[in-house]
Image (spheres, rainbow, N blue to C red):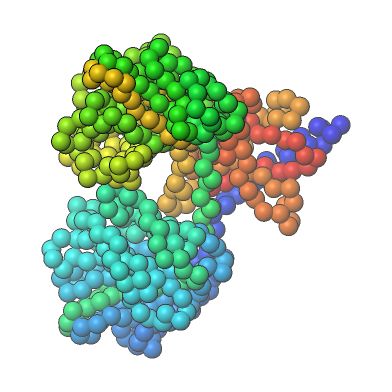
Amino acid sequence: MKMQTIIKTMMLGALMLGGGACFADTLLLDTFDTADSQDINTNLIVRQSGTQATVAWTDSKANNYQTQINSQALRIYASGAGSVFAQPDKDFATVAGNVRISVDIKDNNTTNGFSMVNFGMAASDGFVGTKGYSFRLDSRTGIVLLNFYDNGIQKGSMNVDALADGGFESLVVDFSGGNTVSATFNGAVYDFGSGQTSYAGTTETENRVMLGWYGTGGLTSASFNNLRVASIPAPIQEVVLLQDTFGTVDTNDINYDLLNRQSGSLATASWTNNGYGVAISGGTLRASTTGSAASSLIRLERDFATVTNKVRISVGMKNANPADGFSMVNFGMATADGFSANAGYSFRLDTRFGVKLLKFYDNTSTIAASMDVTALLSGGFDSLVIEFSEGNTISATFNGTAYDFGSGQTSYTGTSEAENHVMLGWFGDGTPGVTSAMFDNLKVTVIAEPVPPGPITPATIVGWSVFSTNVMRMVVDAPDSATNYYPKTISDLVNGTWTNVAHSIDGSDPFIVTNLSYSTADGSNEVIYVQADSAAGFFGIGE
């Protein structure tokens, strides 16, 4: 009888929310869609929408002709050298800690100034362009640059000349936690430098948005259209599939104390090796050879591809004998590959020569890419972070620097792999005596998908049935990419808050908080399984 009650109330929640619930709120949208006027607050009721509408604008020129509505856009003029600003009089931090700010920008006088989009500003900052965070679109040199500033200090510059179309350009900014920024320009991800797509800087307690134009002389201007500020979900918490700290006593048994040193939804997993020297030493995993040219390989007996095809693999690595061999991190390996060092994908840190190289291999002994990391080596454990998606797409960082696969390419697509075992190893080149590499803190996590820009089409729950005593099967029609949708739950529709809920792909594999890319297919629909272990509750699908 209790299960009957659960089914009934959850079905109600699924039917109510599956058809049209949207969990990313537009706080304010100003289309500026009204007649031309020198009063920038004309007709706010018609042109503005959102949960915080209407919001009046203030500017640095007492609402004179230098800020006006022109051709259904906000046009900001400078007369002579200097800056003019306008901002909606609202601190969005009082409503949402994580927001997406989108606006269309057009510099009407590209050689005579630059436009600005500031955010994270406080009321006390007034109309000062060096406060808060700022993106500035600057074409004065003949090359279109999108520059980024943190409280007046430049922290990024991206050449967007090939992306600019000469009309209204689309800037979308995600601002989370008062200090973390990512962005796209005409759909391309903003690079803050060396492939970094996110920036964390000064923490701001308020979040006012300000648009502006700096002119170098004469009457010059920029136009802005469709300013939207929307709340976005908090970043998804890291989902650890397996982490091995190797934090135990020194021992030659590399599987000693797994219960205490391993964690994650797929722990524990044992290690196997190919018969050469292995040990836990000083809280690290050591692979070694003695005298002959050979490889000591240690393989983790877990196929992560059975759970997800989007993983991040991170590990600390150190060549204990840097002149006598190279260390290896292999992934995308199949069970049938055994201990073949040339199976799957492999990064190899070779420090034997004057130029220290991080080499990359795709199912062969032939180098696919090589990067000089001499200046990046720490002298201790070096951090290698690999992102492996769809069984064939790889990107990586070494000590925080994006790996260059050649000609500035930071991503590589190669052989498709159906399985994903991880293997660590050391190749000793035959130097007499024991030589080795050490590995520290291996961690395999699910890659959290970024929140996509712009609105999405709501998903619909089209099937709902009992799978087991406390697990329900849900079938979802997701019109857009499955990565856009997350299962949600709430216990009280009146006073409760919708939160992301863990789900499984088959009712028995790990229950993970992630999007619908972690699912199985039923025709064009996605199938997931959620735990229903309370007397009453509601489920829905949202952003």
